[in-house]
Amino acid sequence: MRIAQARITPCTQRLKDPGWKFARAQVPQLEGWLLQLTDDDGHTGLGYAHAIPAITTQGSGAQAALQFLLPRLQGREVGSIAEVVEEIDATLNYAASVKAAVDMALHDLQARRLGVPVHVLLGGALHTRLPQSRILAIKTPAEMAAQAAALAAEGYGQLKLKLSGDTLLDAQRIAEVRSAVGGGVMLTLDPNQSYSAKQMLSAFARFERHDIALIEQPVPAADWAGLALLTRTLPVAVEADESAQTVHDVFRLVSERMVDVINLKVTKLGGLRRFMQAAKLCEAGGVGVRVGAAFGPALLQAMSLQAASTVAALPIACELAEHLHLLDDPFEPLPVAQGSLALPAGPGCGVALRNG
Picture 1 (cartoon, rainbow, N blue to C red):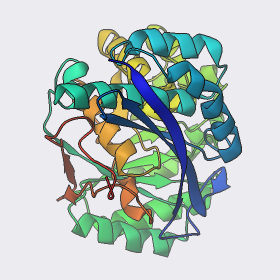
Picture 2: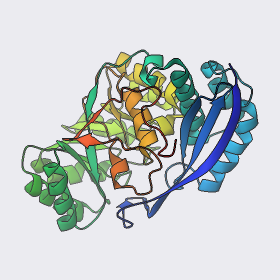
Picture 3: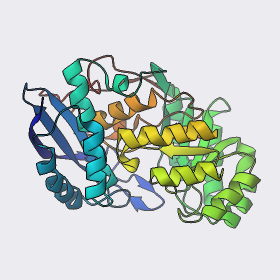
């Protein structure tokens, strides 16, 4: 059975909070592209290319890369996922989120043809329900505290605070959030590379009194030595995100034990195939996995959930509920109940286009 049609359509989503901000950029809306692969029998597989300039790539760049790949997809055997993924990885430089869209669509198509969830193609699920952590965007301490209290009331047991690199203001943000949610909610921090290693060592003396569980990517992505220094020195888990852009990065971080946890994302690594390779490296090296946030519609979160369900140990809650603060989602709902996502039981990724 072969792919008879490959096409892309834009997917632009507004944010409920147009002032949503992290250390490197403000994100007023989310651009992306949907990839649809249809086989000779009419089965359709879906993929999503994330396109935020400050994180992955610019929208028209993602479009151009997808259009470049479309002729290579038409006529291919539906089941030749590994062959196609390896070919496009060698053909297209960078553009990990575009490669991820192709990988997702291929897995979704094959799974729908077989009538099984995507996780079956990845080896099978080890978890049927996964707790989720929610992200607090950079705002005033009072605003972040109010948002934290609201999310805790919805049943989320973990929250991640975005920080700005201003030690005094960041300390106030943490203090007010902790006061708002009490001691029963786990707090993790994400400065998004806004501190140097020595600055973080000093800043943590102000942060640690508020019972912090983990710090994600405090230093610039290229500062591998600084990341390793913090891992050896700080009394909390240190997580790599921007330093872990590829499977090769993950191998180095694990083999040299530079971090305690690695934030893995389907979009960042280039698809489910690369995600699974990275997860196995972490498992073999005793490094924790967190399945991190990649903004996008329910399709992206459902596909990431399929992958996350196959990871043996997830010591930190996943971040696959951020679609809830996006508008204009073209897909069926992927609801969160009491801070957790249930693994969809249907074929493919488990969600479909609303008009599909």
